[in-house]
Length: 206
Image (cartoon, rainbow, N blue to C red; front, side):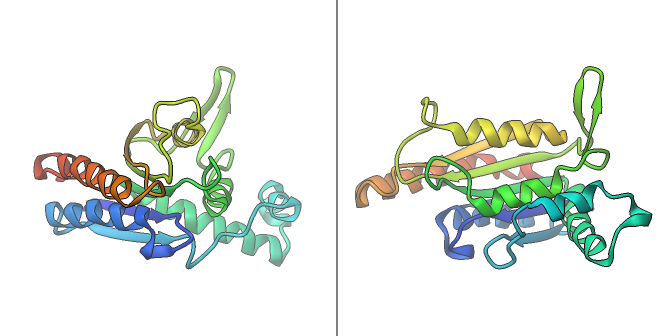
């Protein structure tokens, strides 16, 4: 049985444009995989705490020496990692805020990147341990940045997912959403066309 993890990073939760577009892909995946499981992780509804020295210290502490507070921090991280590990497909709704990823998503990333758990260091560099997954990133922007020097977001997300071992990453862009009504309609329509091409049954069936 296949599993899909939907990550919503919009501050508007399910009402965000990125979440809505991601939902269209997830709906098509459900239809192509009627026996599959969908896990929804909404980072606005259930925000992950930002990484600080105490939380990072909990990751570094030996399991037998962790305080109850540290054990709780690690348990939270383990739960997030378990969702990601179980997923065959990851669908990320990714709005752009001030040229970068939402801070809630960065906090999530900081809690799922753990040495020896989701990646390991080798003499040839880090090796991701979460292999064999397909990721779809639905990126929404107020302006137009794709394939320009101003798009720092795409490279970062692709590099981070690759760091964990998720190398098969497909981006869908909805851009120009804050320019005017016509640009918004065109940007959303273009993204929906791209999603329809991705969600053909022969592509999404497990």
